[in-house]
Length: 166
Image 1 (tube, rainbow, N blue to C red):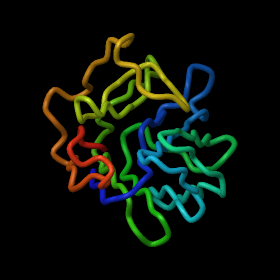
Image 2: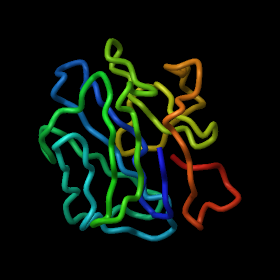
Image 3: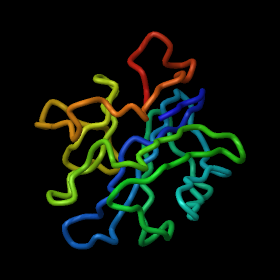
């Protein structure tokens, strides 16, 4: 994953759907800045799909969840995808999971979540529109060896000196 300076990041992905339907996929965008950020002009791209994030505003340190059945169309492959979060033509974040998702579980429907404390993706109980709660979660890494396709290039300036972001 490559992250360039920006206020929005992908923080949770339900690439497998949920217990009621595989079509209930969703992804969560987190505002890591201290200011509200409009999602106008932001898209999430994979394969031939583009999810336009709309015109809402995510509050400072807030979250917004985008649902396949409501906000966008185009399935995320269970074997992995290369995802690119863009603001216009500027790439904000890339997750190269084309060879397999680094976390999440298709059987238990636990999602892929960014743990900023450990600076890695983890498999955990879904927390749409909320922060990852490690204190109550027994999480597991899907891959024992860190994914070589995941790389952090830089973090937003508001997070210099803190834990790396996805």
